[in-house]
Length: 301
Image (tube, rainbow, N blue to C red; front, top):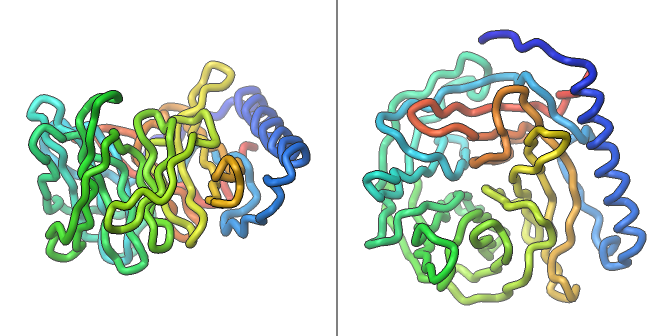
């Protein structure tokens, strides 16, 4: 892999911006007592800024052009969703997880493919896996207004759709939060909390202006989400910790934990997940898609 040249001034500028964000979060917490009600036991390091280069870049082989959407990783598999805009198809790729993954040099073979298209709903969401191993993903109309989505529970071994339900909105980022499913609509303006049978438990404005692209469940009341954020003329990936509290009038408590930056790639563009303490991003489209893996010891030196 080509070694990227670093620019101390660029890193120092972004590191200062990241420090300012953390300071602002602390000020907001002091102003809003509800923000201090819960302490997030986040198992990433307190490093506020992840920088280029990552510890590994792992290609995801696939044929044809497909716009990447979501990412999930289990002990056995790597899952990715994408949309074939020309063919109007929503696809799920399942890769066998190789030994040693996600170390540099990990090689994935061609995936098994599941067509997630549901009539005219062909925009797949982000994807997450619940504690039973079930995959959760939606396929939606490719528009922000007047859209519907079919949320599907998928068996990871057979790739069979076990159950599904319809939501009258475009669902994008998805996370399994305990026995509930969280889904954000187009540009993550609204956050849905859903039961596994599709009952809307809660719907509230997102606590952040970030258009979350992909999320991962953390525990029974918290999720981690990523999306693009512009600053200093560059785009970085904002990685946020969100806690659902139905007793809080705004429903969601927000905490910025990490900002990730790559010199050549917009990490916040699409797929994201957490693997142990690593952050993993899927920012590029197929057939050139790769996973960018960042360990918690990444720093902006």
